[in-house]
Amino acid sequence: MMTPAPPETEVPEEVLFEGRPALVPGVGALLLSIVTLGLWLIPAWWRSRGIFYRLTNHRIVVETGVLSKKLEQIDLYRVNDYSVERPFSQRLLGTGNLVLNTFDKSTPQLTIAGIKTDVVALYEALRAATEIDRRRRGVRMVDYE
Image (cartoon, rainbow, N blue to C red; front, side):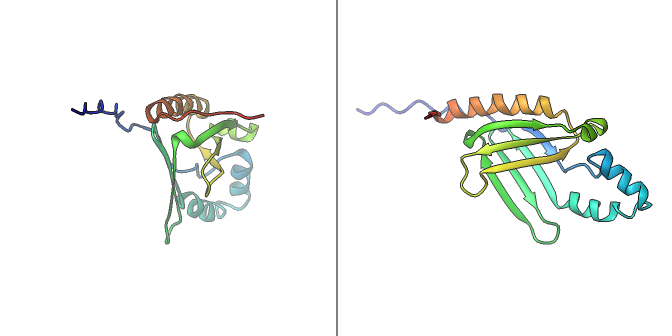
């Protein structure tokens, strides 16, 4: 008689961050919009509307494009390295960048740029979620030097 396998512990998907890049991510962009009397904000608005980020405890989804759309998804267990970039001009306006190195063939490096959130707290939440997702899927990382 076969014993049924124990049910996989399914963790519900929780959204860690959802949003678009900031319209004015740094002081340089702010000065440029002042010098051009706000005209620079028109292409900046179009560019920021063309990217939408959704980070959950299972995956990262990046939707790009305004008229034509492209959807890129990276499972969280494929992320192998994180870094936070917060240049001085972005720190003044409360934005930052999260750079992810992945084992994904189509997106080996993903930069989540100019988001208006606590990037360091998001970095920590994403790192913890990655470890939980790896354990849930039974994925082990081996580092060969």
